[in-house]
Length: 112
Length: 115
Image 1: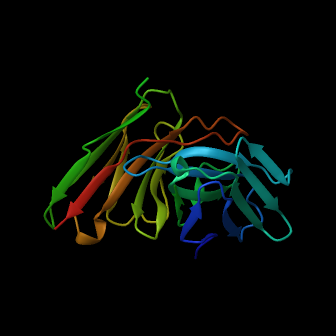
Image 2 (image 1 turned 120 degrees about the vertical axis):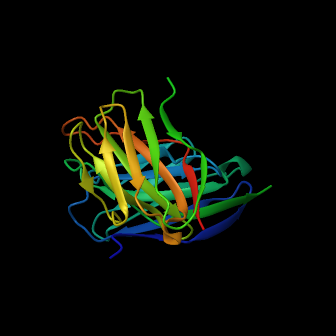
């Protein structure tokens, strides 16, 4: 049973364009939604995270949008750059718990 | 600070062989995790340790054992390796303060092939 569904599996965007990755969750007890970025040959690293009491969080070119009623959240990368080419994972967890559940990942390629 | 370190970086085993993957963190974190990453499957939790002296099963624990040796070290053992355990294994750690969801820091991974 997959608790966090991520789409698309892969994405190709022109340099300067907007990259959008979507995730949906099932467990309404989730109250923490991080995004991790992974470059080839490296471990994932936290990119940005949001809690459900806000609908949007922005850090530089990266924005998380959160829709609690639809149980969906998304990552937008504005002005996408070739250096953004990586695999992105959404995840969800419960603050009082010790673990998070990852989506299956999106491989993003930005064309120069 | 080295962060999270994993050894070895690469390993090839024959079916039935055993091995232990080592993980250490120097950030004084309470919680440690073992994940496996397979193409199209994302990161799946094998085992985790919320604090020194405790371990719990994750989503895919079968065929694995773990030991939280001390606060710094968390090892993953494959007693009898199978080709289905061919994967990239990541160790992670997190401070996990009470009431706070802290970031997980990942190691560089161990690429394991079972023939």
